Image 1 (tube, rainbow, N blue to C red):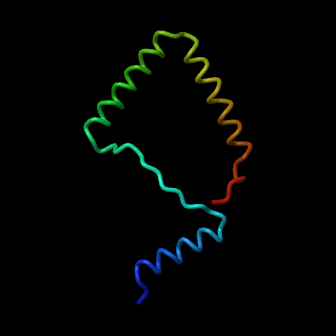
Image 2: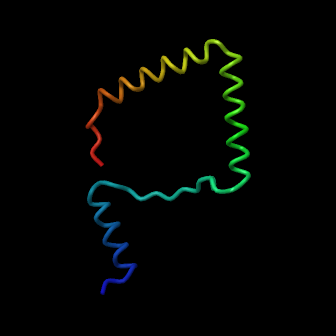
Image 3: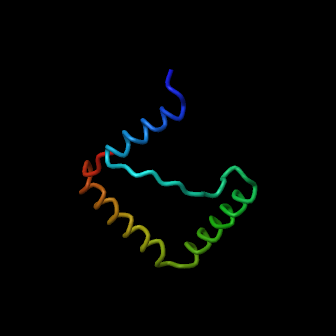
Length: 80
């Protein structure tokens, strides 16, 4: 029977051989009340900014279109 440590080592070796690199990062815990409150507050700020700035919506839409065109052009370019 292969130990957990050995399975992890095999997996990491296989991923490394495939050109992948392991990284570890700390991210906000979205399960907390403080995260939910901050996310809600940020969404309110963004919604209000969109209503107050006539050019913002057009800017976002035009850049989204450009991004989608770039993604379409590179479809299949990334092999995970």
